[in-house]
Length: 202
Image 1 (spheres, rainbow, N blue to C red):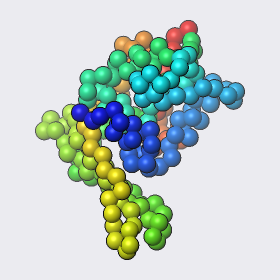
Image 2: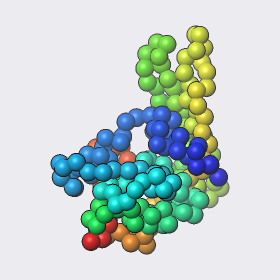
Image 3: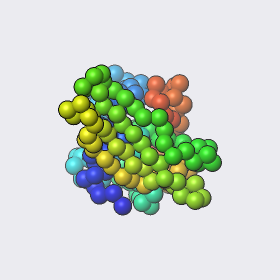
């Protein structure tokens, strides 16, 4: 099981597991629902750590957090904690990969991601290790940076994820007490993954 500190580095820092800037898409979804007024947004890990002081307007979860919590058996409890931290009518916004179809193929790695040029180039590589039944996968993420003409490992993180279907995500939100749960396709949200929006009951 991943430690809390390593989990925070992997998700909140966004440098390793989510090198692209997808937080703006989640913020834009919340802004469209709540309107243009300033609002208080916290990350789900801050809620689980007790670092967020409720009530808040928005709780958000980055790409891989819910599948990791699901693998550890804590998805519904974590969503319930987020609901309790939200004000009445507040939003939970999460990007959740849907890999149930991909689990049939069980690829070992997606293409590497390269950013920067020349000596500033960084390469992020993901390695996937699937369970025999395809219900979960181990994920190793390695970030390489240039160093004196060669490559050096800047960061490496290992986690385990459960493959979540859209029906399972919807059921988890309902069991956690959310209302008006909606799944937005990438074309609707501007995020490369499906985005889930759930409203704290009034």
